[in-house]
Length: 147
Image 1 (cartoon, rainbow, N blue to C red):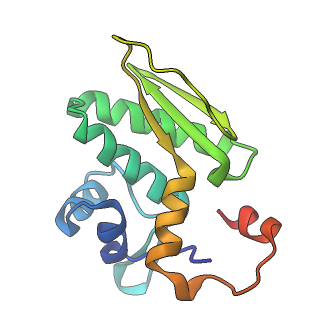
Image 2: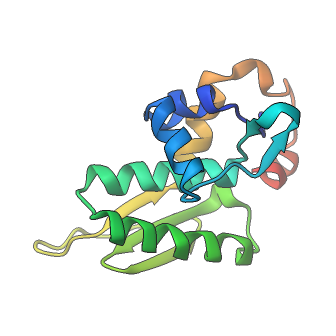
């Protein structure tokens, strides 16, 4: 299972421009977890979650200040999560981020606005775009422990 991503791979997965990724890195908004010699950047799955959530919120017309505040909260929250990231669902409502483990079933209530982000869908998208990185017969536990 692929664990590290170049900025070009991130741009394709998250559907944002390479220049946007560079800008977010330069402004310390969302930075890659690893840098190799020559400033070669590598993003982790956790970084991808932040980028994908930022992209989703931007698509929902979040202001820049609100977007930055939400991503800072998410950055603080992710290291505290004891469960595998692929099992998480984020619900973002206003300035709050709610994190759920496992399947989340909700009835949509008219007038109530929240944004739902399933981490599992991001992992499935990665596995689809990078099938060569997946082990042929990997046990489920091993796959969960990485993501």
